[in-house]
Length: 200
Image 1 (cartoon, rainbow, N blue to C red):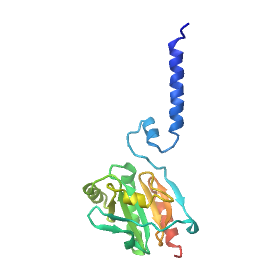
Image 2: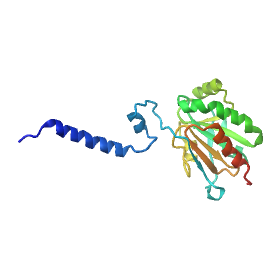
Image 3: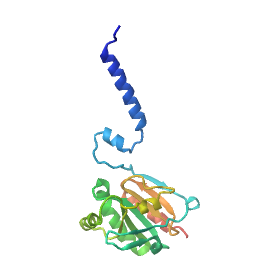
Image 4: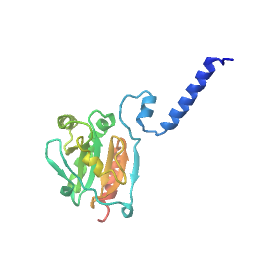
């Protein structure tokens, strides 16, 4: 005896939905963004802040790259500085939204031993230059689309696994804090101030 087709189809759809939901439980996954109708095509952070006490920080981060102007960018050039490293790309809405705040903090702290560095994870150099001109960004950005050297350099204790991600590095070159998602100006300012106040 044949069973009605409609109840079987409904049951199958329910099973598929349950499996799909279980497989996409991450709150910031591209799959979730697709499910909610978003088409932004990137993994968005939620503003989560991770701070690492000095005693628990790993090894110093070492990197070598090239800026959007074709100039070398070496970790050794920042020895003794607090670094603020922002991972971004031009079409990312929160990256565009936070750019003026990052530049304002760069101007505020640049004479206090704090260096800002951008890391562009998707664009060609010309796009990064245009972005900097449009938003008034004066600090350099590494173009990290060929070998992902900068992303790999920071892929240890607190990897930049969303765009944007902002990492604060202490004077010894160790990762001290990470903001996943748009960096609120007051929060980032507090993180910078805390790391600046540390005794190397």
